[in-house]
Length: 186
Image 1 (tube, rainbow, N blue to C red):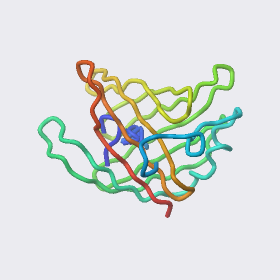
Image 2: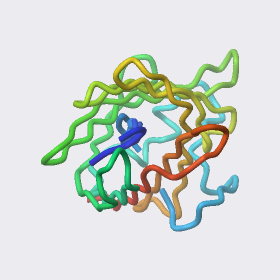
Image 3: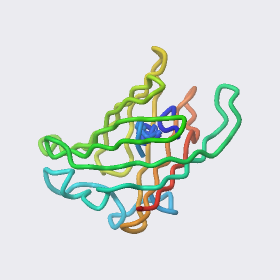
């Protein structure tokens, strides 16, 4: 399961992310069938505690991640489990586990700057750092093999039991989808 140059990416991406995702992404990391987000489906926080606002995420999620063709690897679909838990500092910790991938990612909110943030690392050595003002679209950087790549994760959720993280990378001024993670609460 890949997020942010892998899952959420982060789901982190990612969230890979990662996955990531974050990523993923993210590296682990990383929410609805609609790619547009509204106030009703954002993962934003109105207070100082990301953990309280995003409590619906706590638990395990079964994820299917569609991965774009990258570096000669064909387009494919991967599967894994993302588990969210409250962590110190009013943050959430996401651990992504798949047969061929693992990542750890944190999500938080800084009430002074009114900024959501996520950071993570994955089993491929990819690091992710992204921030967001709306809690839906996170932009930042993934670092793989010493090379920085602009990344963007869009998180949405149609219900308390479905989430989606779309991870994109920017190359020569053009954004392209790297991973599309769709998860269902277990």
